[in-house]
Length: 129
Image (cartoon, rainbow, N blue to C red; front, top):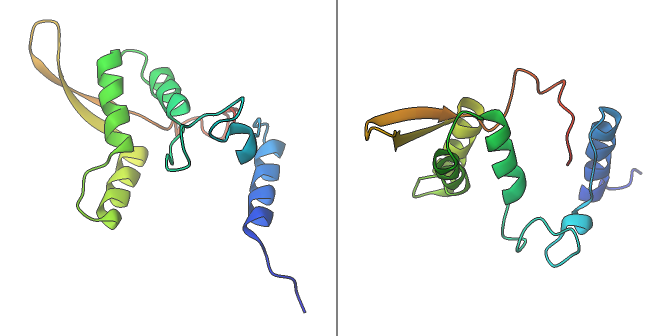
């Protein structure tokens, strides 16, 4: 008879693999709300806001803070009446980029594609999880 596989077993395996790839790993309790290294206000937040904002700025250095903040807003509040539609839209924005319109210094409406993931160097990147 085999023992049941717990969610924590899968998490530990995934974190171990990422550690072997050179990523710095942090367990959920280390970044939990209210802790010394909290990275979200509550467990209701699925996204770690500082990490997402940092990634948007790092991957899109030529874009203004306002454009990046609009991309952040769209990523964290995708449109759609139903959860399946919001998830599909969030996936599309993560994989393709977030389309944002803005006014430049002359007042002309421009468009920008804001990347949230660098797929070109993802296998070479080292980061913190």
